[in-house]
Image (tube, rainbow, N blue to C red):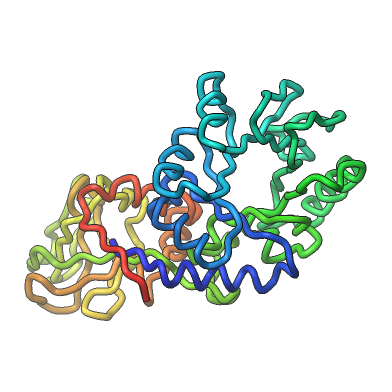
Length: 334
């Protein structure tokens, strides 16, 4: 598993060029969407991001230990003990209701149509309130509804325009300039993945994550023989298959059967049932043990795998990252 921090920095700079002066805040929750929170936060800040965002106080405290001067905003709820820790370590918190904690920077969240976190209105803010925000439900698809949310947000916050206002996620940053306000919160886009499930290169973004392995065993299945649990793949003719030492324990999910990887530079189909520690690919010839395989990388973007699994790149990236303890993780700077 290779993480290219150079690509991440270039993505941040690409996004900044479209903001016309608004700040970019890098979202590094869930261990940087599986890419590594500390390294990615540091690289994003070096490229011009003005702040970083996490989901929880413990995530923010991990960053604070390594980035003592960074602006850090916690997007999710915090317990009383966590509020105290936020106060001690100069974290900013998002609050959804009327109970504003004292002596800590607060961003009040308004629910304009997401139907999740956030209050229904913004009352006269206390001196702790430094920002006001909302979150868009459909910026990756239904732009008309997203614009309705933005109009509700604009109307609700007009009397408080002196506060920092922010609404845009990655999709809105790329498609809705009117959503930029004072700052945008970009997660998936800084990692070079498309919030639309399309080619991220269309928006000038480069994937940060690559994932490679090798053939551990090549074997010939005779016609009628099968591979894997449940005999989901039965060879219709004599067929070479390569066994990869990767499975769902590594984040290569069971519903990725039928996707393709690159074996010795050529796309090959994943066949049979993906097991915990092994995956089979169909080959056109015998290949030696150690033949390189690209699971995610040039020619096999994560978006392709997401389409096969009927999910989003966010989920796959987080799953790969969470399971990466078995993988050798390499951080490079291109």
